[in-house]
Image (cartoon, rainbow, N blue to C red):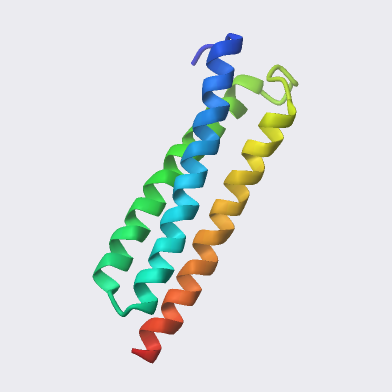
Length: 108
C-alpha cells in the first residue's frame, strides 16, 4: 500500500465512503419495507446488497486508516467526519433493520 494519497484521490475515497454507506442504508430500509409486505425473498436480496455496500465502505475506511498509520497523515476534514457518520449510521441501520425484519418474520 502506498503511504500517501493526493487530494483528488482522497476526495474520491471520502465520496466513495459516503455513497456506499448511503446505498447500504437505503438497502436496509428497503429490506424493512419488503418484510412489512411479507416479501422475504426480496428482503434477503436487499440485505445482501446492504452488506456488499457496507463492505465497500468499510474497505475504503480501512484504506484510509492504513494511509494514516495512526500518525495524522490523512487530513480530518468536515467532509471526512461526515463520511464517517454515514458509515456508522449505515452499520447501525443494518443492525436495527435485521432486528425489525426478524420481528416481521416471527409475525408472518
